[in-house]
Image 1 (tube, rainbow, N blue to C red):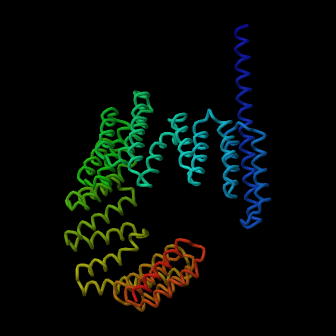
Image 2 (image 1 turned 180 degrees about the vertical axis):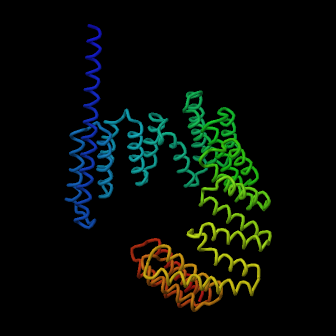
Image 3 (image 1 turned 90 degrees about the horizontal axis):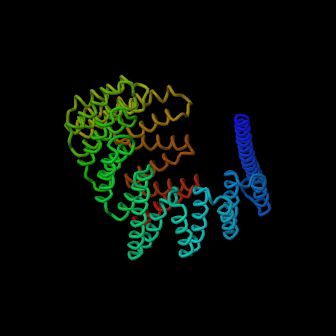
Length: 475
């Protein structure tokens, strides 16, 4: 009898799981259908939606919510509807939608915290910080271990920093410090502790206390002597030393520790490359060469990494003014990886190197050879408008520029701009060239052409108008 009863329970469990799976599949399907109908409507109207169109789209998502109100896809539908209300400048309706999400999904911290955050941001956008802060505090109290909850103390502090409100920055910092330390105590010896300490470290960095942030990761490295937490601790310390403290030597020390402890980690090759670059930047050329040569020896099958290692070696030899080795490395790249972008760059790089070292006759010859090679490659490319052909044309224009053949550089850039009309880079380069030779009127004309060609690109419009204004003031 007991055995039969057990079979019945198992059967009910399977039926329940199947029902849940079917419901979730239905929710996903309805949400997908709503999105599909929305895209079709937006396409038909060319993006110019009327209030009636917005109502239709809301109805598409409402259908999904009504049929499966407690499925996570229903929450996604609520978020979509709230976004539609915000697009129509209806913040009250959007907030009501977010409240509905909280009511239905209060047990799902990630979903509920996102809804609270959106309510707060609406208040914040309308200048109601105190009301926004109430929503943010609810996230911290109710959902402290969610992604949004963990970050919220930092978000509040960043708000006051942006306002340069020192008193509230200090208050937010102290409150966040108590909060994170309390959580660390609560979750000590659990898998959550390193994550909370990560946010504590971020708090210290936000307050300008890099040494305290490093101390957090020192403790984590000692506590988790191996594995992903220790690896992250080492790399985070390296980052802080490199980017924030600006102590290259200590950053190198951390990176080398990572290399030694995790020789087979998938990112170790990139860490070796980075370490070589840091040695170079720190003028320790011997150690830089050692690291780049190690890359070439240890990763014979990684073409991209080997090319970067060779380029690193070339820069080291350039620093030592070892011309023979510089040229040898560049030619090695071209020989071993003839189809790479680096190989394409080699003729220009050799000519540029001779020019920088003031080997005039060698530079002239190298530029002639580079120009001949790039012109030949362009002829072979024919009418192909691939990125490869564009790269060749770029290098040809650069050779003309560096060789002071301004007329040919201008004609090449003009041809590129007319061929690749959707790429603003060539017009920008042409304008810069005109500015460099003090042809301000021609530069202004090119910037006006930029505005004409890209009337809907706000970044280009802002850039071009600023350049035109600067040129007018300098006349």
